[in-house]
Amino acid sequence: MLQEIILAVIVSIDTFLTAAAYRSCGIKMPLSSAAVINAVGACALGLSLTLSGFVSRFIPTELCSAAGFIIIAAIGISTIYKSLIRNLVRRLSQRGELSLHTGNSGIVIKLYLDDTAADVDNSKILSPKEAAALAAAASLDSVSIGTVMGGNEINPAISAFFAFIAGFTAIIIGGITGRKIASMNRDFSWIGGAALILFGIFEFMK
Image (tube, rainbow, N blue to C red; front, side, top):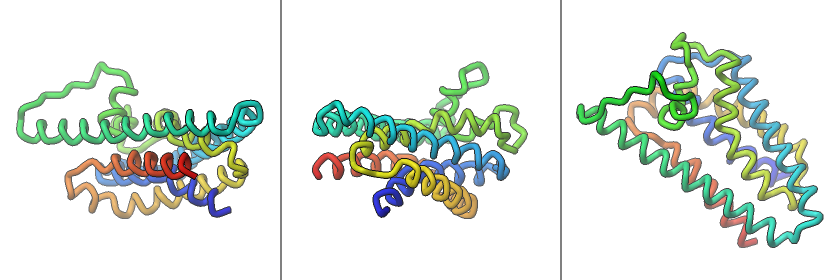
């Protein structure tokens, strides 16, 4: 059960950072929207664990582990790169050296630069529909981790349950600490990427 809990904590890091970002911008996340985000993430983790566990019966474990590590490392590096881009955009905007217009761009591009862009109608309330779009964009971490861990005798249902609980906890804590994090004027999403890479290395070296 310890592995299931660790998985849940890792996949909830991005949820915590996103909740903190929303709180710092004064955007409310109703219980229904929080439930949508956590349900999508939990289902993504559970399904990927189940699928990779099934596939691992026909593919050598070493090959599955190598493929999973590559996927996790790629996502981790991409997350760190995204954080660097966000920090660069923020600095240039503050210095008046950048004018960024995303009004006509797709929601995926907006979410890449700003998690709070999911609030499409600028209502300062994240609707369940908007939460679903945000969850879909953020569920890739859950899928990648599930792909790596599927052949390690981890219970998908228990993992999904803990991920759902950890997600709600992350949203609550993120909401409480949001303004404090925002006052640092930094993007901390790289933490989630670094955690993914370290997790992937640890599992690959076992």
